[in-house]
Image 1 (tube, rainbow, N blue to C red):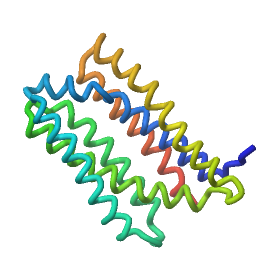
Image 2: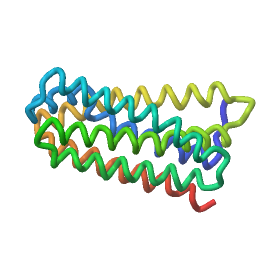
Image 3: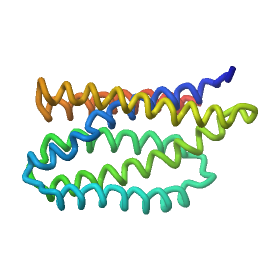
Image 4: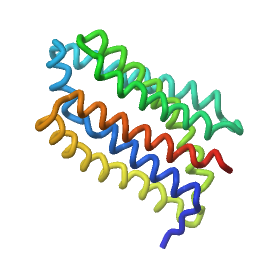
Length: 184
């Protein structure tokens, strides 16, 4: 059985909370986009912008923080920025605003994720490294699957604004959890 150290456990817990908060929107993104006046091309542009911005920023951030002692601070900042931008969904009323929020979320994810990956890699027992990464990836899929269901229930019985507030609050908690590693 794998034994995780304190840092690995914190990283996994914070990441799972983040995946839950982020995953609540899931396929509802298309419905929300249509609700604010977007069509199929707007959804395509917003999602493409998110992925391209995230990809480019992953590379840039990875290069900038490679081997730096402040990786944990960068990760926590990325988590916090992601939470703040999630709350911004409540102000989106047209396709351009959605495009901007999506691009911002891409930047936020790219700030947090390379640092998370580096910190997790440093804190994984080499004897069980493959299992530890499988645990990380498997948990994120399970948590996201559950989050999609919960998010759909909130949007159906409540509203998108209620969903975005719950998502943002969960991501704030994820940020606080991840910030616990700064005590080291």
